Length: 119
Image: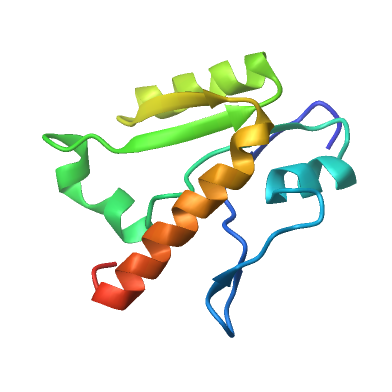
């Protein structure tokens, strides 16, 4: 995967307990970098459900925010441009040090949606 851009959309959740898993490296993005050290990792899509992304209403009045984090500025810029051109609003939150926070946000939305049957 050397030099390739990897978009990490994972939110590590234990499906038996529905609790957030805290990877040893700090986030799934850092775990990916451990395995594929020459890849350019961009964390994204942690707070979106597939069904929400596919609805027509997302392309008109409602903007979907996509939070991005990466240690590679060029990869982050390219992924941001791709998402922007696809109708999303990207918010760059900084380095991959923010990836675990994005995973936590994704977990909170997932848990809230399950508890209230709103996914």
